[in-house]
Image (cartoon, rainbow, N blue to C red; front, side):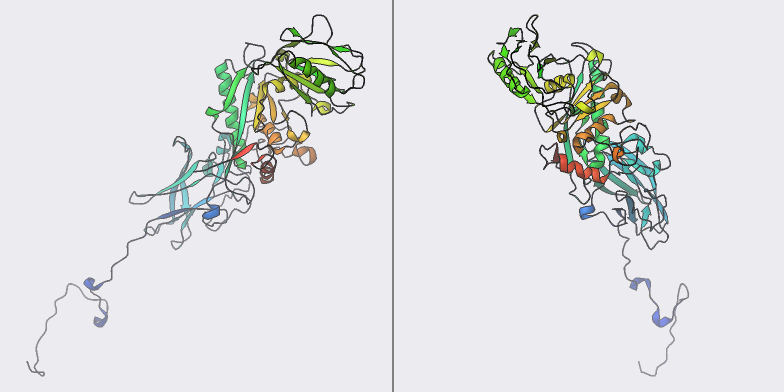
Length: 519
């Protein structure tokens, strides 16, 4: 064909182009469209930063559940400066331009896979499709009362230490996106994120040998209630990253009151011997060789020579020197006698003879008679305890300094309290032990009595915050609060949690808490 030849060309089209011919783009020539990325769901901390690395764990709040430190606003940019333990969720879903959505948030018990708490339909919002969706702030709590806190129950999740908190988002196609973190809080501000475990040894006393237990109608009831007390202690102390282990495997038992196996020399007054007297008694029905008192001899010296007389009969004797009471002139001493198999040996008067004929230094038998209550200590005897308390605790508490012994009785004789704690800081020979009465058990999550008395032991502190400062009845260590509500006495401050680690943590002497590895 010549260059100047003319020809007709016909174009047939389905529709008119909306672009200039020179710039027309035909479908066969279009670049491939990238599929939307998979949704991403993440936990945010109180400042809206992703919880990663050192922040990749969740903590139970120290605050009153429905107070102002839990933000009520659902605004995208809102933060939670007053409570760093609050959390929220953030969702990136490139396939959706919706301004609202929902997720499900639940806590899973890793021991059995059962959900402990669940928030269904937790709302997510955003001001524009160009930013991720965010939930309202959520607070983690450890007990049922807090989980039902008025006004905020839709943003409160019940958990326990070690639980897996799982968030689930289901997109428009029914596909699920799941993310999770563990409840493994720090026990001290800025500290290592680990769990700490304490060991409890709970003994429920009968009022009389072979009689009914001090709590519950039967032994089975008593054991159930004792295990529930372990659960309550776990709930309260979870704020500090501290657990006492699964209640169903706790060391609990129902026991008889101990026999009279303790002899006290110069109880209360700590006076030295006048001399010229004689001490005599029987051990399991066998009379010891009479021991003469020596002028000016301190109670400890008399008790040590009595221990020699007991050992001469083939028994095991322990001697304890007590701290002086406030009005005493010196220290008293206790003698505890056991058979070689460790069982307490019954001490009694030798016929009609008095225990001691010394004119100044008394000798007394420690008897535990719980049918009329346990004689509680007062301010002047708080460090030492009463003779009946020492006879109870020295015979029933174990010799392991790493356990906390809890003895449950029917009531205290004076009805002045529901619990008592014996702490190491007082310098007494009875420490890391507490006594709880049935009323303290009955009040459960109203007074939190056992958790409170445990606080004295773990904090190694005999005082109450309201003794030296303003009354704050929502604190666990408040002296007199009792209220089964969100504002009840169960809060522990981060500072108190830090003190627990110093006084009772793995590096303390003795160590009442050990580190628990987390999966």
